[in-house]
Length: 284
Image 1 (cartoon, rainbow, N blue to C red):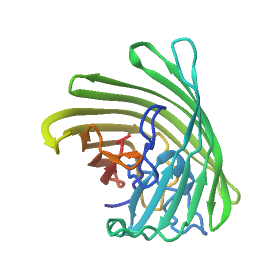
Image 2 (cartoon, rainbow, N blue to C red):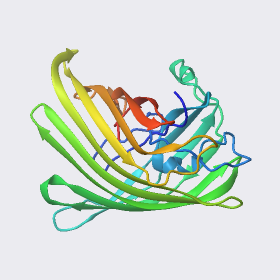
Image 3 (cartoon, rainbow, N blue to C red):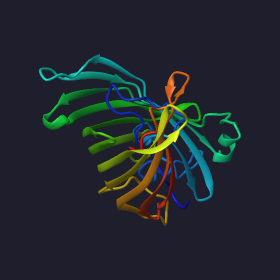
């Protein structure tokens, strides 16, 4: 894998399963504002709370960023009133950590970066099962144990789930703008328009006595008019396409108090940032 790969989507609206920070999801490739004191100058960890969990291979150096987004439902959306949800996106990064270590059961032994960006989401039920969710978030990023940036952003997503027999489909349209203000460096921003679809089909193949194989195909199209600052010589693509497949069991097996996540693989076509993605959990 070459260049920078980010991973996106940790949790959806209330009522969906929350995948904790050690789940993997590929994010929109981004690059980053150079910081002389950053552990890896090609990773803008300030955007990690918005862009999600993942392993990144950046010029031969490995980075692992884990994101966990607790959510508290204040009020559930209905046909007569909007819903309100408080969220607390948290992210932690560890550098020079490789996926083989995780397979062998060795987790990162240090945290190089940390970000927190609490916020509020509002849910509005629309016609034909669409859910409209505007949101705002603000917080800080930390590196080397001290705060190095103020992170703030806003966005809105339009999503719906449709189930018909053994088939399911999720459609997503998402617009977000996230900014970071550094103390001693130029500010940076990340604007993204995303359109995505996730198709799922229950198959006749049985996994044990109680479960059937659930196969999925997904596609993500991202438009990034002005990608965040990139390393010298690397040109982020403004139009990025990701295609992949996932597998799971239906009903989902239980792993203690968690539902077993979907597993899959995808490939992102993004110019210098193209690469494979390991998917654990929802693809977006």
